[in-house]
Image (spheres, rainbow, N blue to C red):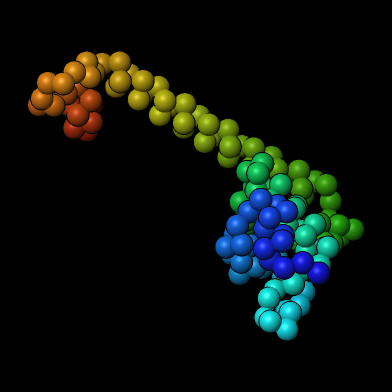
Length: 137
């Protein structure tokens, strides 16, 4: 059995993160020590590894809950369900990348148009562009 600090150190996450996952129902202590410490077994450690890996590739906690439900009851689920969840996350990620690229292009244009000098910001092209709500300036 492992204390929460041991698992946190093994997975390079904070104990607060583990407690949060526990409150979200993603992790459950198997017992408590006589001193009241949460104790986790090997299966809890493996489940946390799964959660951390899934989080690392971009799955949300809601997604991870779905994946864990499938993982726990694999024989009643299909690969199609897992792939569908993954493809949805991929589409969301691609959409977010497009949004970020759009932000990058806009910020680049703003930065290029500004002289960046030490003079007063009264005529700053970035501020002027941001004040121009309808794009007519």
